[in-house]
Amino acid sequence: MPEPAASLEEIRALMAHLPGPDLEAGTAAALRESHLTKPAGALGRLEELAAWMATWQGRHPPRLEHPRTVVFAANHGVAARGVSAYPPSVTAQMVQNFINGGAAVNQLCQMIDADLRVYEMNLETPTADIVDAPAMSEAECARAIAYGMMAVEPGIDALAVGEMGIGNTTVAAALCLGLFGGEAADWTGPGTGVTGAGLEQKRAVVAAAAARHRTPDADPFELLRRLGGLELAAMVGAILAARMGHVPVVLDGFVAGAAAAVLYATDPRALDHCVAGHVSVEPGHTRLLERLGKRPLLDLGMRLGEASGATLALVLLKSAVACHGGMATFAEAGVSGPG
Image 1 (cartoon, helix red, strand yellow):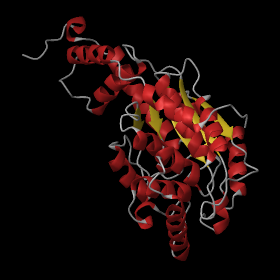
Image 2 (image 1 turned 180 degrees about the vertical axis):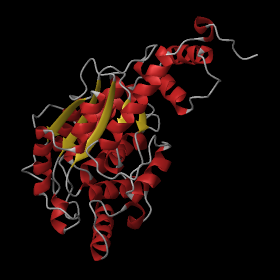
Image 3 (image 1 turned 90 degrees about the horizontal axis):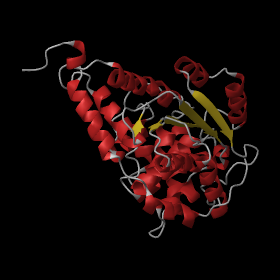
Image 4 (image 1 turned 135 degrees about the vertical axis):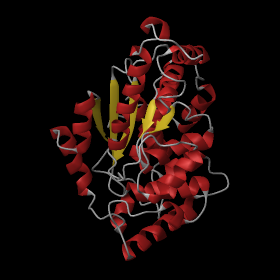
């Protein structure tokens, strides 16, 4: 992973300059929608998505010719506590699987012609065990955020954001507990398949980590530094850069949602350019989406990560854009409109 220069103070300063919605583009979308050959509202959420795309791309009609899926991969010191059904070595093995084209996300990206980018983040050096110490130094956290920002390049029409990292549902649960409170059991689920005594151990780890690092003066970025991981910080950066670059974002599952929650906890408007691609069966994800005010596009019982749910949801965005731009108006089709 290269080391772009940044500081957490610089990242916090960006939060005061987030571009807002393009209301003119949104109005144009609503006007066109009202003239298309269908009853008002007949396409349901597809109509909402078309207007949302126009509003956050800042153009009408919206386009989705160049979607990108990004997967950030990192390892976690807390994985040594047995919180996952898989060893940390699987992170690097799965990254190679992505490179070889053998993962689920590869097939989904190929199906919808999305550009897949996988970013390895110091896999040989896990973050610190969050039960004993902060996950990252300020410099490490800021560099990871800045690195994630670099994934958003000109010409991208929408961004699906996801991750890979053994142990990261533990980290995500601890971060959500730190940000929003509650009990460890509220946020901690089986992840890769941990059950019974293993799940109880995982909940104890989450509770201990949050108790150590959640202090009255810890803002969301400080909690990210203490309880997060390199891939979560990179996702924060990608989501933030997408907002600055007028690129709508589709969030993947629980871990991606936990990263996004850092921005939400800083400014509840910071995720207005984001939709939840799906709801994971990881139990904390439902609670988190309710907290973020995000209604998921899909509910398919998925819990894979690797941006698979977000990439699949890009199909819905493509469908929304295609209907909005390609359908005839009543006047064009010679069809009588509503009386």
